[in-house]
Image (cartoon, rainbow over all chains, first blue to last red; front, side, top):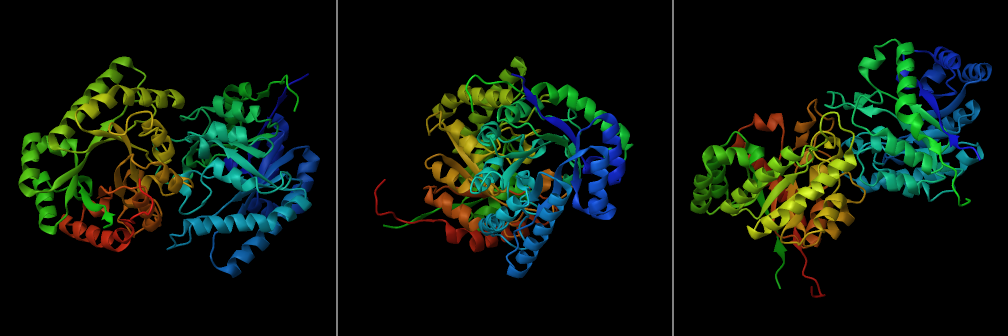
Length: 287
Length: 287
């Protein structure tokens, strides 16, 4: 019985000066099997053109980023967000993306109703889940680091995202595990273990220490910070995940670097720090 | 049967341009019953002089900040830290402080051993607990916001701090609940509920949105950010806490403001946002 491994994918944001075809071509040359794409650059290049580019190159799409932002208390705007998310699901389906990454949204300006915001996120996922499943797209609930709770995501831990995902069928809703967002969590390894069958995407990057002035750009290349990719990757593998592992880095210095160099470094760090921990050991007990 | 309330205390860091006697005198005049003091300014003014100042004024000390920093893997330096913490316990006892606030410490430079760092924190608390109890001082384990995990505190959630505290007698080790650090936590109200008899200190401040460049100065006056003090304070009260509530704010603009104005504002915001939620309702069931 052979073991299974997950494989590297380049998220578009890491090499964001590249157009869709530039990224896809570079990945094809290096044998990188898939890419994570964002709606805006896909729209710029064109949805049909992006699909054709992927088909021609043989490079797969591991995720479409991103939907979400469900926290408004204004019913009209909340409905508009749902409509926009249905369009995002359609785009993901058109591109053959297995999942649409969702960012929950933060508190509205002046709001202190964290519980209410979280309830609206859950309600929105309930509105979208069946539609996503019908299009062959899984919604990926991504817990964001608690530092983003106020302004970006009221989903703050993997346990919280998973508890929401578990309310829906596994072919409709799952979770995204992103090392940057969850590495600090004392319960993360247990939460990953609980996520068996629910992990729709595994994203990796490190965290800058000390933090930069703009917290949105606090991500670092794997190995340049304190995150232990061995324990996290082993846990993800042990939970049965065999999909893509996306390198997603928001970092001013990396964005100023030649994307080809960034891609080479990411590949090298992946092989060094992550790949050794991606084997799903054959288990004696069947499953 | 009358209900009990907790009461306001001013943490020295909020009005840090004031000396110990300036702070104590201002609090005495306004009827603020206690202050939270830091080791460095206390040492500057003198330990005996600080004690005398408190005795003369009738202002109590709600906490001494701070001990901790237990994560080094170097046995000699770890022992030195324990010695320094014993001195901090002695200082707290000398001042009549009911608790010594502990900050766990972050990862050492270059380390990725988060589990090891957390184990060393637990071991250090085990070394100090009985000594603290013998001096009449409770160790207050403070979970810091996960954004500080790498460089300041590997204790990242109230649940995690509480699980450690529960390994020791309640007169030796408890937890500090600080709104800034825990407000985002989906499990915080349950964790506060679990903390009955273990809360040694309740600290309040808000969080700046958007964040400032220096994350250490991201604290704001209560009411100036998204934190809901009603639910958190009610939970702390319902958990039976009747001690001091310390206003502790690290904020450049506040430090540039006349400390008397800051104290007035803190009092006003406390009365408006927190005091209405501090009543421990008499319960029908005995306890």
